[in-house]
Image 1 (tube, helix red, strand yellow):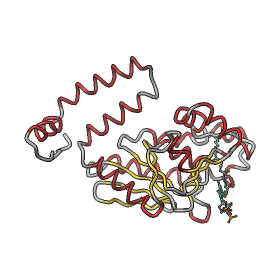
Image 2: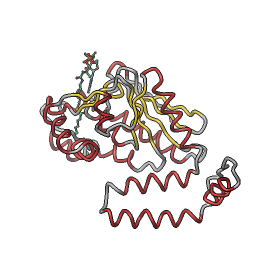
Image 3: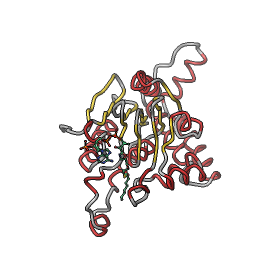
Image 4: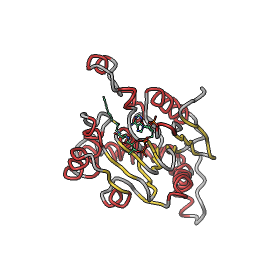
Length: 257
Ligand code: CO8
């Protein structure tokens, strides 16, 4: 598949998607949606790869859903096409996805970052849900995910005032896992992804599934799920190798089985 709005590359065992609509600050239109989901599905199916990074430009990860594309949509059109439901494809990717965010991550851009498994931000990153300033509200998960990540008070503040959160506040609030200098962002994210990709791919995928389950269920059910998946891991060759390597004081060599 050829892509027009994103750049798709691999770096060793890491798949890298770079949003590439610089004139529109990487605004997310339906073409971007289709291309990102297709690229991620291809990475997910490629067993040479163990983790994925999504990034934008230094000025903008993504300045939101494409306002010009949606401004004249009617309610019936939005409803019938179930506008934006396609982004759920991203949440079905089973390998870990890191969002490497520099500059603006606004509206759908912030929501895209939150659909990833964790966010590494550059020190110039700015997160926001400014939809209220356009007469609407978040539509790609912001009212739900932001609230779970930073708590009700901050999520209400962000969604109701439309103010932006800088990288330091985002790290303090738990929205991002780490903040790095802007110049190092992509390399740091790739380094983190490469570290993940060197572990056992099935163990990594099961771990992602278990952590995500914590957002979908009760603590008791989540703990039960974790224990069952943990038991299942004893069927992996990689569990035998990882534990033998520890006991033999040597690095593990995972076979991804
Ligand atoms: N959509 C379309 N075009 C955009 C967007 C966007 N979200 N953001 C920026 N652009 C375009 C601008 O129109 C401009 O294009 P042009 O040169 O043709 O005029 C170009 O990108 C550069 O932008 P600016 O000149 O505005 O750049 P500045 O550096 O002055 O400002 C900002 C940068 C502050 C990021 C500013 O561009 C801005 O405020 N952008 C809009 C941010 C925003 O409101 N985002 C939320 C959009 S709504 C959304 O994401 C969720 C909708 C969910 C709906 C779900 C329905 C089911």
